Structures are given as structure tokens and as C-alpha cells.
Length: 406
Image 1 (cartoon, rainbow, N blue to C red):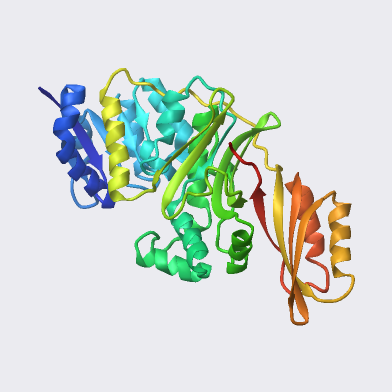
Image 2 (tube, rainbow, N blue to C red):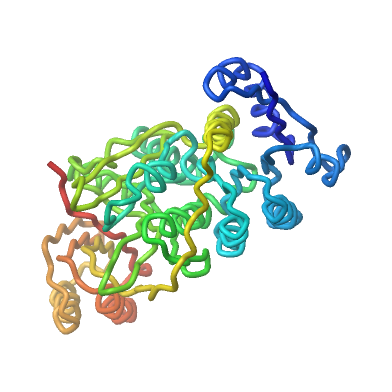
């Protein structure tokens, strides 16, 4: 039986897990592909030589992370006709067009299942299973850290700060969790999913994103009272002839397929007229989970023929989309307050669906939910409300996704 040489770039948590898994599953892979995978070399900061590894490898696995030298190494491998497997979402979201173009030009695979959602096979389903379907929307929970934090806030009543500390203690969050909690990590993943779903050249800087740092226990309590779930949702969808790609917290109806995805799990829902919708769910990124997705890509690349990604097309990015909104206001408890707020909302064309008022001594808390409206109109109203002299703190708002899937 012939061997299949795999060059490994990077040997951190995922790289070490991949090396171990490759050794454990080499016999099974050999039975499937007719070739036995084995490492040709490992590159780290202190050992290995890239040129030597590249020359002796049939395929390169990039698990270094970061933009450089990962970009240089991946490009060089593709340009000499070596397929590449990567888990580097930041690399793909910044330099995807360049890398996919190089793979297409060389006629070799560039596979990246592990870059989005851990073991959730969203990439493979979009790229292969649904390649002929007209996808209208892809949305999901693509960051396990934030999902764990929001789940703990809901389950225990903890504050954001307390839940984040628990996530760090249990290893679900990094010592510096900035890219996770501010939405940037999820935005990079949504740029990748948008490119696959719509064949569009979407980069990270075209994705609007918000994080969960400002979510409070009061927001969670509101969701619990009404049977809603609060999640960090990434969405890529066709809107007005263009694309909207965004990440933000959102309240979900209990019957929404993403509402019950808890803990560090990820999930992606794909909608198309041909299939209605399918939801893929599983553990988020972790050493063993990511290594498993990487090995799956290696096996796919070992089975000819390669399927180079098609060149992406320019697309108009739509940012002003329609949504329902939750608005939280803390105000002085005096006559005429609600009337002034309602007048401002009405002048901007914002229709109120429900209002809940709670007394706070001399003050009051207003929780308002409005019917779907263009974001620009809603934010204009919020800006005007924020100038009123009876407000105790700045207005706080969260989107509400009202749809229900049967």
C-alpha cells in the first residue's frame, strides 16, 4: 500500500491533537482511500523547515493561525500543486479571494471545514451537498464561547462578567476573549459561509458585527419571562438584490431551531426553496473536535478528483435591513414620559408591539418591543430618545427574530 505524506504547519492544541488522531486513524483512512497517511514533518517556531516539508508532502495542513507567515506558506503550497487543509478562519476571511484563486488556478483542493463550527459540517454541506441549490439564507450560532456565556446567564442568573469568568475557568474562553465576545470571530466565520453559500467575494471588513459585552441580567430575565432565548446570531442572506452579512445578539422564539442550542455547541441553519431548511448542530471548536474536522478534510482531499472553489463574484453589501427590536429604557417615573417616547417612535414610523413598565422607586423601567422596521429608522428613533432629559441611562436595544419554523 502506498503512503500519503502530510506536512503539518503548527503544533499547538489543535496541531498536537491532529497528529495524535492521524496516527490513531491511519489504518481506517487507508481502508477508505487505498493510501496510508503519515506525517512528513512538523513546522513550529523552533523546529522544521518549510521548504523541506513542502517538498516531501503530498498535502499540507495549516494549523498555525494568524495571517503571516500562514498566508505565504498556504499560497506557496497551492502554487506548486499541493492541496491544503486549514482551520484558519482569520486567514480565509482576510485573504480568501487570493487563496481560492490560487487553488483554482492550480486545480487543487483548499479545504477548510474546521474553520467554521468545529465538527458541524456546514462547509461540506454548502460546498458539496447543496452545491446546486439556491440558498437564500445561512444563519447560526458559530461561536461556542459566547453561546456558553449566554447559556450560563440564562441558567444561573449570573451577570455577563460572572459567566465570562466561569467560561475562562472551564477553558471555554481564552484569557483574552475579545475576538469571541465582541463578535469578530463569528464575523470571520460568516464571511466564509457567505462566500460559499452565495459565491460572493465577502471579506471580514464587510461584515457588520456586535458582541455580547453589554448584555445584562435584565435582558436575560426579559427573555425568560416571555419564553425567548438570547443568542449571538450570525446571518448571511439575500436582501434587495445584494447580501447582508452580520453578527449580533438576538432574541429567538422558543420554536426556532437555534433556540435550544445551548452550552458551547454550535449550529448552522441553511434555508433554500429546494429544501426549506436544515439545521446542523454539534460541539464547537476544541482541540479534538477541530482535529477531527481537519482529518475529514484530509481524507476528502485524498479522494480524487479535487474540486477547486469557483471564483467569487463582487456583490453589493446591504446593511440597512428590517428587524423587530427590543428596547430597554430606564426613566424618571413621571406623567407624559411614555407619551413622548411613543411620539418619537411614531414619527420615525416605528410601530410598538408591546410595552411593559416596572416601577423602580422614583424611576421606572420600560421594556418595549417594536414590529419589524428598517434598522436606520429604529436607530434614528433611539438616538432622539437618548436625548430626552428624563432618561437615567442610555437606551439599550437587541434585535428580535420572530420567525418560527414548523
